[in-house]
Amino acid sequence: MPRLFIFAIGGTGARVLKSLTMLLAAGAKSDPFEIVPIIIDPHKDLPELKECKNMLGMYSRINNTLYGQHMPQSQKAFFRSRLTSLSQALEGGMKEGFDFDERIDETFGEFLGYNSLDRNDLNRDLLDLLYNEQTLGTKLSVGFKGNPNIGAVVLNSFEDTDWYRNFENILDKDDRIFFISSIFGGTGASGLPLLIKNLRASKNKVVRSAMIGALPIMPYFKLSEPDSEGLHKDIDSNNFITKTKSALSYYENNLKGVNALYYLADPHEQSKPYVNDEAKQDNMAHLVELIGASAIFDFIGRENSEEENQYRYALKMGTKDVDFGNVGMEFNEVFRDALIDYHTFNKIHLNIKAIDKAAVKENAGFDMEFYKSSFIRELEEFNQRYFQPWLSQLGKNDRRFYPFNLSLKDDNLHNMVIGSEVPIRSGPGGLFKNTFNTSNYLNQMETSRRGYLAIPQELKATRYMVIIQDAISKVNHTKIKTS
Image 1 (spheres, rainbow, N blue to C red):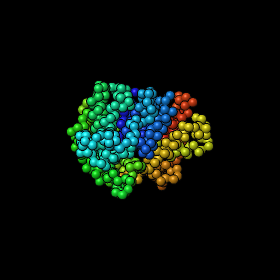
Image 2: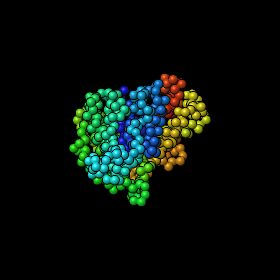
Image 3: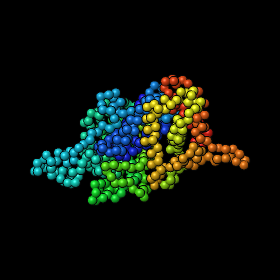
Image 4: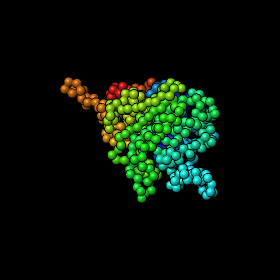
């Protein structure tokens, strides 16, 4: 199976990777590629980074449990796409995980060896000309604080690391590479052109000729004003546009060798900015990150070409409230049904689990022991810890993606999808009742079960997920008219 190596650079890279993982969980297909994420972020203590790595590991384990021994014939299946780490792709020999760049517990000046230089050394004079005292004193353990001039120097050492050499050695001719980064900060703006330049200058012919895609993300949020007296005063979002213009000017002449380049931005700024805290960066999920993740699927579907192409994305309508009605035809064709189906699963799974007796549960062996299994516990944790908060956060920014009625407290699933609410009654005099709830899906599960008898009984997790997904898809297609 060919692989798509995704270099997620900096905080924006990790957040787009999160949206990508949610789409994969919902059943979006990466066929024929296996996804191999590689996170590059020197800020190792960042909670957001740790959560992203934990989420990727959780997805990988769920996928392996479901489809490690039995891949369903159906093109629709939750967690269908394979996602592995670079260490798994190497089949050992490296630490397990999704990031391999090391934490740097030095200031930028210490990294350069500034203090070891004699005061009369011309190299010290040169560094004094290039960098001021504040820049030389920047702690690299919290990232580059919006300074691409620092990042370019630090990240240039990647070529000599074991993980990068291993990556080059295992790249096959059918594999592809994709980069995600912001171009208004420090890590992403410096890492994107540098890594692409190194790949195109590689001694390995396969690496030099690999198909490369890139997603340079321009400003799409703002931060609270930096506190001159506080700890978090080095990043000023008022400079984002200036930095973006500088990066674009540089990219125009120097960013060569990219087969597919996806530019993405949102000039609309939130009325309530993100907190300017470099130690946490606890930002809500954003529509731009979701749209950015969709670019990866576009790249997967494109033919290998030596030509350089640029792509831009726009909403169907310039609106602050985005749902399936105005997000755009291409997005809907690929992701609408998948997101509706997986959101439905999140709504009905616990209801089905709580029902004592049901034909499909008795006939398929979905007993309480199954619902207490480690697989179900991890699946529920993934949903409660990642998918549901992600979906909720997308609806809280000023430019919000809010396709579902998340405030529904009951089982009236006919009102679940915004813009596709089903009238309670129809026909002459409101004769026919159109409401539907968990029972509709549960009944369909028993019907669907008979089509998956070939899945061995011991692969109970696979049977459960395939049957429930099939039932959800059929009920939704009939009731909600998802396609």
